[in-house]
Every structure is written in structure tokens, then in C-alpha cells.
Length: 376
Image (cartoon, rainbow, N blue to C red; front, side, top):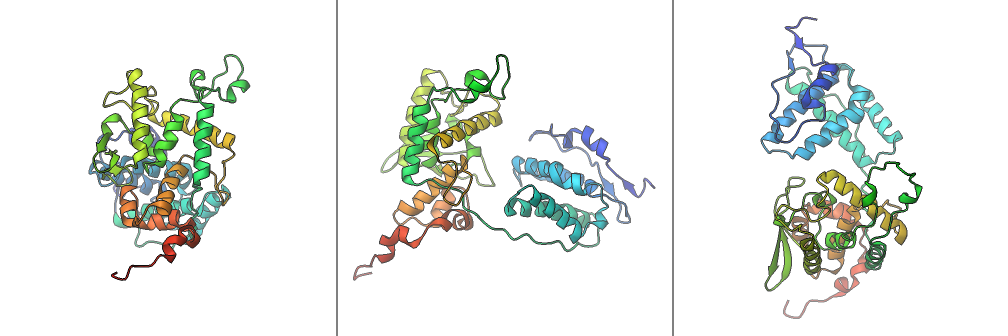
């Protein structure tokens, strides 16, 4: 092949280059151009376009147009399914049939329609990169995925109380997995950590009264929290940006009491410096810290008999955020969706699709039957 026509990045080169081997970090400089394709190129593979797209998106991360986490998700999805199936195909040969193969493959692995649709967005972006650099003349017609939005399994007030009571009862208790481990056998969590942590009941209450995402747990530090006492008492939380949202969040009043108890507990352990994390500060690997909290929360769900939601949804830590938003919709007097959405760092559309969708008219029958005064 004429090198003046195409300088193609091979799979081996991609694996060896730090930009695409999973060893990159947010502050790393974008590497020099690894992919140069002339308009007359005809033997460009999907893998080539994928590498070029990842590099272009890296530059967007540095310009702060997208979050580093978004780039990581894109890279992981490329490696997991898109490239193994379509990476070695010529870009010009990718059509609706090839895209349907990807959809079918993901469907066979029980991916939700939402996740499959996200993979299709990634495929479209990859092919559009080929159009933008002149390799493809036009975008092929690709099948659409109908997304069926299913709300997460939020907890009722009674279930929430049972969850907190169960977590409190289990504090200090050894996890059942300890009984299955042989002497000297290793587990992904250190043996000394396989006891229900004191902070898990606080975590449950804190999440339900702050609207935070589970991903916020691993990054929140004491310097991100201000206790505000005035006409209203609340926490002002200046958390790191998530999903392009960076505005401060406001908690409900109970979160203040939870934070003060947690802070007192941390103070006795010398863990209240501004840069100390609120939860599992001793674990410097924050992804690991979040995984450990998820592990113990699953145990609480099992013990409380609350593993599945009313529609059969598998419950996770994310359901605590769902509970926070749903309870505000139910019991927040006169609260509007825009205010709630902005404080929860989401959109009104997401509130309607995933949170308000489970509410029925009977839940707020008092509001429905209320009447304005004569002067209104």
C-alpha cells in the first residue's frame, strides 16, 4: 500500500501506545497525530477511525468541552464490543446490516435498550469522524433502537427506614464471605475490611437527603461541604463536575445532622482535613472505595429483603438518589421540577422519564383536589 495514501495505526501500535492502552490520565498531553488519511484512501478500517476519534475526543477533554470520565467510557466501550466485532472491517463496508450485528450481540448479553442505543451513538460518531476527514462520502443508514425507559427501584419511606435499621444492626458484623474463605485465601477486599463499616448507615441517610450520585461519593471531600445556618439549615455542596453539571447542590436539613455526626467520628480519627474524603478516607484508590461501599450496600439489601424494586428492578446504590428525588416529588410542598432538576444536577426531561414516571395521581390526591381561594 502506498504510504502517501494512508498512514494507518495498526492494532499492535495502538496497544503499545499509552494514549490507547488504558494508562492515560486526565492531565496527559494529547499525543501527536497518529492517523493521517488522504481523501482518496479506500482501505481504512473501523479501528483506524476509532483511534482517530478517541484522539480527537482527548483534545476535547483538554479543552474542557467534555469530562474525562466520558472519554474513559467511550474508550471502554470501544474495547469491549465495538472494535472486537467491527474493528477489522473496512469503514466503507459498515452499513445497517453490520450495525444490526452489533445490536444483536449486545442484546444477546442482556444489555438494556438504553445501553445499546449508547453503543449506536458511538458507532455513528466513529463513522461521522470518517466523513469529517474525508474517508467516507456520507453516513450509512443505521437502524434505530427504541429506548424503553425503566425507572430505578426507589424505596418507600417504610423501606428506607428498614434499610437504615438493617445497616445499623449489621455495623461491625463480619460479612458472610469471610466464612467461605480458606486460610491464606485472598479476596478482592482486604480481610480487615470485611466488617460492616460504621459509616454505611450514614451514607444511606446522607444520599437520600442530598440527591448525590454514587459517583460523587468517591470524590467528595470535607472542603466541598459548607454547613449553612440561617432561615434554613442545609449543606451547600460544591462537588466536582459530573455529567457537565458543576453548580453547587443544596441538601435537606437531615443531611446536616448526618454530616456533623460523621465529621465528629472522623475528627476522633484525625480525618477531617479539607482534602480528606468523607467515606472510606483510608482507601486512596477511590474506585475501590466505591466498589467496597457497593459491596456492603448489597449485603444490607439482602438482609432487608429489598434487593428488587416494585417492577423487578435490581436495586443498587443509585436507587438512593432515585429515592431522594422521588420523595421530594411526593412530599415537597409546591416544588417545581426545574428547581429539583438543577439541584440534583440533571434535566427536567430525566426527572420526567426516570423519576416522575412511577408517580400516580393518587399519590398526590390532596394537591389534585385542592381549590384556590376566592381571590386567586
